[in-house]
Length: 199
Image 1 (spheres, rainbow, N blue to C red):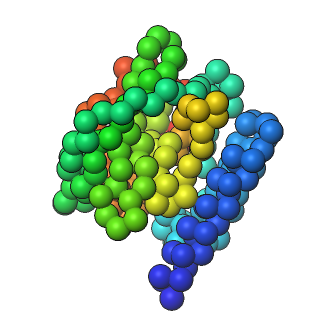
Image 2: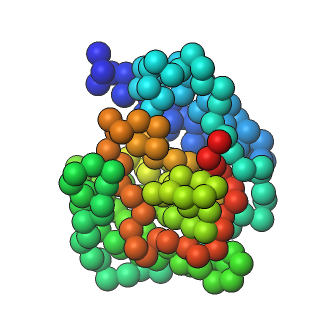
Image 3: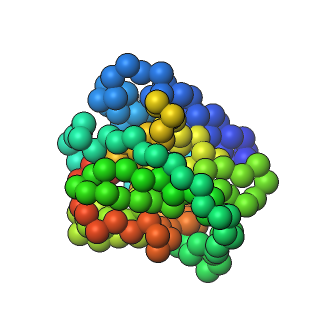
């Protein structure tokens, strides 16, 4: 049953990110996260890899782990603003921009933080950067999608932005998935050579 398969996928992703947050080594947690994702992509019924391509799937390509691309961001409240974010499908999704995350990475950077307006909500953070469309997926990559379990947590009162954990939305693999893309405020000019990359 597809709904129960999706529930199982989400449960596994929640568990995976809980292990990442508990780990004392960000790099070891990243390696475990990579291995678990490869196994899910290869074998799970809800894999974004089309079923016909799974036997040939050899793993998701990543940039090498770079500890300098794990940063802590100060979160500053912003006046709530409802926005329709473009998707890979025909219709946008409704989110509320509620804050901005400020951090240092090749200079001062900021990214908008969004809350999904649908039932239960959830923090959502997608971004594009100087590698998008050349070295990484052109539309965007994700760091947070808490409705699906992707949550890197908080340290020292600041939001963890570990770009080594940046990953492609499912629509990068198969157009049957509809994914929200990077909104205008989340397009960084600097290249982020961390996380999932193009093969």
